[in-house]
Figure (cartoon, rainbow, N blue to C red):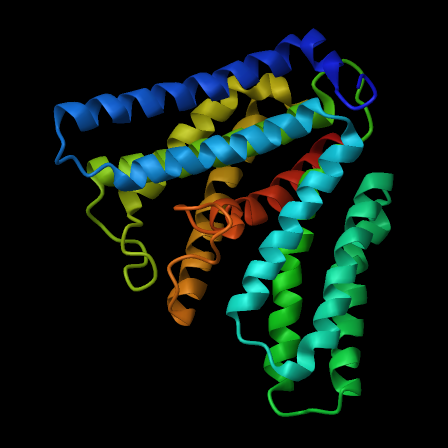
Length: 317
């Protein structure tokens, strides 16, 4: 059992502190909404409760990923990519003739995560954007059905970029080399990324509910307001400052990256909202009962993960 549990994380006070903070905040939010609901049964708390419950699930998954053996962490994150890819593929209406190419796309998932596992940056960074970009159209062409082929080529590659390439950057964080004096390492970076993405989602929603009057993109996501966006940007940047001990960054660098994470999270959210509105679905799946699919919960991470990884990689590595 000792070979599978990363029990050494208990010796890292920084990691333990963040885990306690995350679960304390979630516990506080759950109790607060419960009490408010009892005091005022007419309070509109359904969306807040749903978001809190879904983040209980996601926070638990990613915190476990920092505790377990790294190999299991890679597999767990790869499984999230697999489920998210399947959700998108199932709702975007591919042709019957696309099945072979979709199988190739599935095969690319373990390859991409293996490249992250061995830390081969050059291959990791081009495999899906370049190699799969060139191979998938070939497989579609070999089937001989040209009607609708352009849409299939574009859609299949875009799904891979979103659900596999974007999310796989979380796994590569665990493969980054050690930096002298930086004890939190890849696990700390992963926790920083997930925590700030989570808190940004909550902050933007909360500020939007409290002060929101001016819509950002009313035809795409009516609940998104400039007040919520700005409140989230400021709050997340400030919180990122206090979480800087999970990164090897200085003050100005961590403020900049926290701001970029908040902005990227917002972009990921509205991009997925536009796609679901176009298709006419509320959720991408039903993997999390009552809270939609996996991609509904990690749509922001698909944008924040590559943003965070490449900024960290450029600045610190």
